[in-house]
Image 1: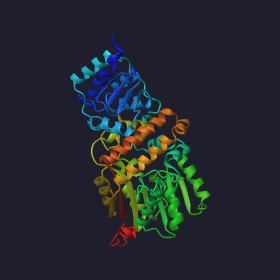
Image 2 (image 1 turned 60 degrees about the vertical axis):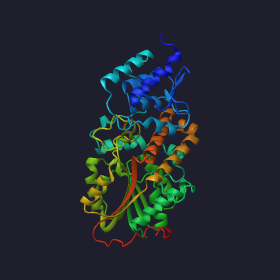
Image 3 (image 1 turned 90 degrees about the vertical axis):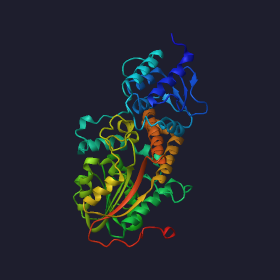
Image 4 (image 1 turned 90 degrees about the horizontal axis):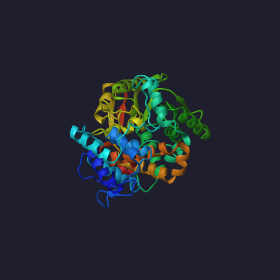
Length: 433
């Protein structure tokens, strides 16, 4: 018979096996109120034995994530500090398979806590796209996008704020606020593309139309925006109509591979190419080259993999067993900057400029997470507690990956031959030159 006072120490043993360390970096609190682990460390609360069964069957980030999404495990204090501590050993980000000896120890510890039992079913928020065909087929890409982006426009407005911009902002002043930072990003892209009145712009992955609205309103361009999300397109069209720009902006639900009404004077791709995939990226670059007029520019704004598995957002042979792939961005592949530039150059485009924005993304994601927490009851009402927990964990993990330097985000400016590249960087504000 296990005494309840023994629960936390045995939990600590289990977690140490999962994290690959004999000294856990967090303070564990068990369902019986007992605690173990270093005092003053971030708290991880295990609320039920069902959480242990999840960890036993999937001893790594997926098991821990499933328990968190289901509400069986909680991070009641500083969530950012808890995630940083849990990832500090490297076993959740760059996992090494458990040895037979450590597996036996894990089973014994679970048995001592009466946690042995059948594999629990995954929380309902977990997605499986196996029924939609091969990875990065048009049907499967549409399903992957719908899983993430069709949660409801009200939920996205709650998290993103009035700008409805869902990519890294540019923080000229960290105290200036999210809206100003998103506007600064949109304007920087417009300047890099050299937009002028009357130009025709293609905005790939246009989201809710935020960049298209800025380009049309501030630079006098005509914009075609394409997205795979019907909900994004519906709200985007409403925003365009409300702005009186329906004659300048068209928003379609369309795969980028089906856009056939070029050529365009400029192409923006902001936070979209992560969904393309490593095997498709060369075709993506060639497709965009063909849609540009001679001398026209492309701005590709994308997250870049720097090292490791990154909680399942890396272009690894198989990242389907990770939190990000199962719950947040199924089929997403974050490529290295080298891979992206190589694809663009192989298509015939000339790279004019590369700007790294990594520090800006941590600020952006923390602003989104603050909005989510400030509006938590409304978020739960809109998408359910499980999905709201998915989003909080996703945002905290994402902020960690950028702040720790494991991921970057870059704007790559490229040009099709036929024009004269600038001698300097005229898109820079005067104060920056």
